[in-house]
Image 1 (cartoon, helix red, strand yellow):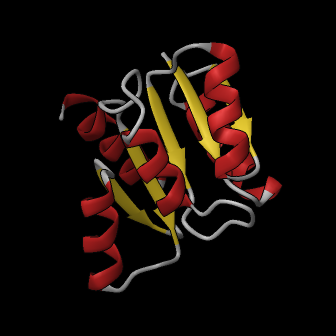
Image 2: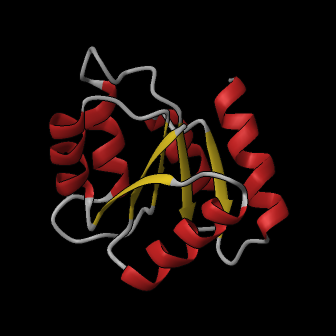
Length: 122
């Protein structure tokens, strides 16, 4: 499986990538914001799952997801949002934008694994 991790924090990208590696997933691409995420998708073709933050410069995670959902070749791509935004209204907004599953930071590797599996089967 190929993953795209979109987060403006290089530290958080490293944590997510290390967690994915420990779960047996080695094929991971990175982007520092939503705009870079769209560019990466355009250059690499396809990924199996996107893991994105909400709060990023240039293009937020919500705007990234809305842009992604408007693209025919990516409108059904599973998306897992990993963010500090924990309010119910934020979760509802993310789901309405097209997020498949949502994790509030900090997270455990077990929660992360469960949410990836859930996002892939939805």
